[in-house]
Length: 359
Ligand SMILES: Nc1nc2c(ncn2[C@@H]2O[C@H](COP(=O)(O)OP(=O)(O)OP(=O)(O)O)[C@@H](O)[C@H]2O)c(=O)[nH]1
Ligand SMILES: [Mg+2]
Image (cartoon, rainbow, N blue to C red):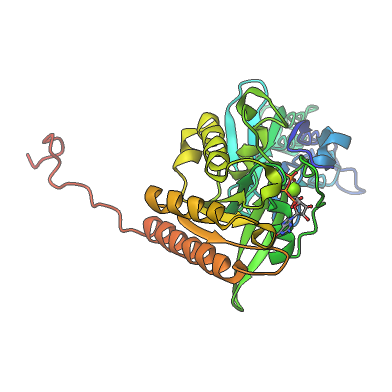
């Protein structure tokens, strides 16, 4: 089951209460207070991982709490600290406070940790309250409550390349050909009902992630077909790979197919429409009229789009397509790295406003 939205309640542990106790030992009369502090409550921590890509597990456990801190004890013993509760979320999860709708954290990579609810503090034991006027305090602090809040988790998968196209265009067939992903493939529209991810290797040490999502039809942004809500899973990809069926079986016009899907992308988000896009004509082996591929190729050339015709059955064109796609992914990764490591502009000196100038 693929779940990309979930609401959960998280509660951090309460701090343990401080203890009221006195030294009671032979030959130590009026030994004084000896109550130890309570332990701090455990926090709730979210951790992103690349090993899962669904929020399904939260549907079955919508309430999660971390351990409470233990009470302090006599002989100045501090109570045990509550254990943190670490919840794993797939990389690409956005965490919102369900009440205020505030974005608390965006897990935009695997291996990140975020403390979402802090545990309460343990209360101080009565040893801390001894004073010159009160040598035997009979009170200790209570531990404080841990934070509790309701979270709305939304998943936007992280992939480098997003496959788009009409139903039956051959998206799932292509991902199964070039990666270890094994989605369902069949000769009817809307075979794919949930996104699939596949890792495509580029040489020995490099790879990129491809996302296969359900097909789009005209009016998808109004809810036709399966709608366009799955498009958010390719919102963060670097490139779109737009597949167009070249075989005569579809009975539609190739260029029109491309334009219909491109319009749906633009209605979903202008950002998606501006993403670098590569077009692949599919089912080259089943194509009867060569004019179809020529027409699409000309169209792409005039629109400045890279084009490659492929067949997932015979394998024709697949290597060239992967070279084009892999090359673009590499270029965009390098550009993103360079931007992230660009030296920051030093602040203008002396300050333009004159504030802080020598007196
Ligand atoms: N001859 C031929 N058939 C293909 C090729 N690629 C896919 N097909 C067939 O086209 C049909 C649809 O393929 P899918 O991969 O399920 O298409 P899809 O784009 O994932 O479709 P949806 O999941 O419904 O959006 C299947 O019957 C495939 O066997 C190809 O290169 N050549
Ligand atoms: Mg499919």
